[in-house]
Structures are given as structure tokens and as C-alpha cells.
Image (cartoon, rainbow, N blue to C red):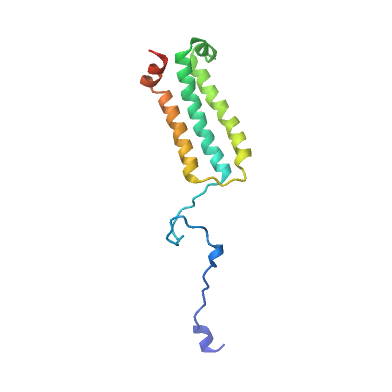
Length: 140
């Protein structure tokens, strides 16, 4: 093998512009930027978890506001309406997940959209379980 062949530089060709992912920052550089979209199946899981949390918060508010709902949610007299609230949230999560999974399986929703919806749902769930909030709504 000739000596010049062993020391010849290796040519590195840049990726064609069309093959590079779109850059929304306007700088033209995509290095080091996170993905702007999330897989639809992952989005379905994350949003469904938020819906489950929101369902729990809404169940708490309804149980404190309406005595008939409190009776319906009492699945175990030893636990009281908490048993029904937990079961409702645990049952709602997989149902919503399945529906969203089918609806979003081929989608690529924006990460900010998924995060925003999940944050709103988690906030509803948190506020619904906070005694001053559900007490105010229930009129206690």
C-alpha cells in the first residue's frame, strides 16, 4: 500500500439540507435542540394519566358536594367514599388511555401541547383534593 494512501484525509460530506429536521428557532442550527414532537402513543399515556388525576379530583368535589354521589362512591363502608373515588380514577385511566392510544398512535403532537394539557389536568386533580377548594365548592 502506498504511503500517501494511508495518510490521505477522509472526506466528510454534510447532510443535505432537506434531510435535516426542521428548526423552529430560526437560527438554522438543529444541533443540541430537543425534539419538538412526541410519539402519539407516549402522549396518550401521559395525557391519560392527567385525566385519571383530574377524575380523582372531580370525584372528591362531587362526593363532598352531592350526598347521593358520596353514597354511590362508598364501595366499602370501612373506607368510605375514598374507595369509590380511587376505583373511578383507576378505571377511567385505562379507558381514556385506550381511546387516546387509538386516536394518537400515528400522530406526532407537539411536546408543549401534551405538557400543557397534562399540567391543566394535574392542576384540576390537585385542586379538587385540596380541602379549602372542595370545601368552597361544596359550600362547607
